[in-house]
Image 1: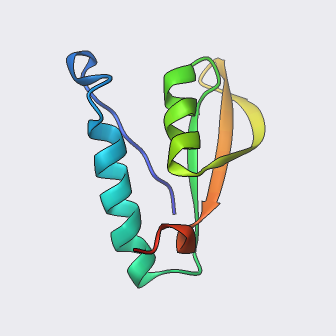
Image 2: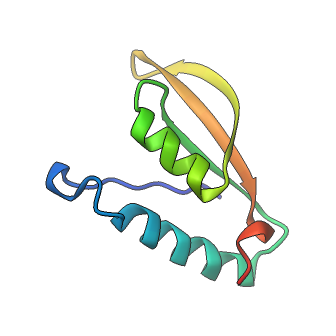
Length: 82
């Protein structure tokens, strides 16, 4: 399972991604608690990496894709159970 988020620039920093991701992860955790979940973001996107960390994701590895370094982060879905 992969978590993704894209926001318009004028919505950045307002907490929408955190709130939406938290709600989606909690709902999914109730249904699939044993499932791992991943986030992939460009390593240069420090704000997205901070959001992933705030949500409880941990970086696992990096790789090249779309002409940029990407960071793969993961977390057990069970950690989002409410």
